[in-house]
Image (cartoon, rainbow, N blue to C red; front, side):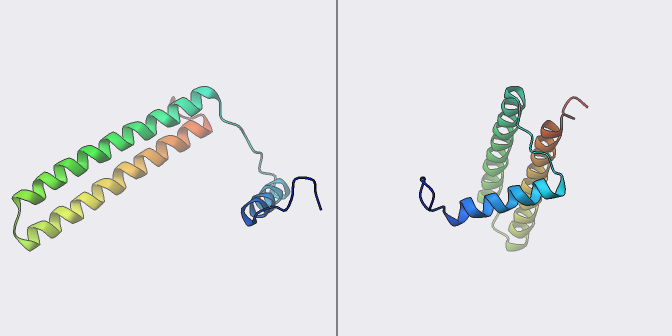
Length: 102
C-alpha cells in the first residue's frame, strides 16, 4: 500500500482519464493567469445576464395570468438562458484555445 493511503474512486477515475489522454496523444495544457481571469470575467458576465433575464422574466410572469401566455414566457426564458449559456461556453472555449482575440 502507498504511503498516502488508499485512493478514492474519483482519484482512480482521474488517473485512468489522464492515462487515456496520454495514450491518445492529448497534451494537458495549463491556463495562463490572463486566461483564468478572462474565463472568470466571462462567467461573471454570464451570471449577471442570467440574473437580468430572471428579473425580467419574473416581472413579466407577475403581469400575466393567461396560461398560454405564461407558457410562451417560460419557453422564451428557457431559450434565452440556453442561448446565454451557449455563448458563455463558446467564449470560454475560445479563451482556452487562444482564439479569444478573434
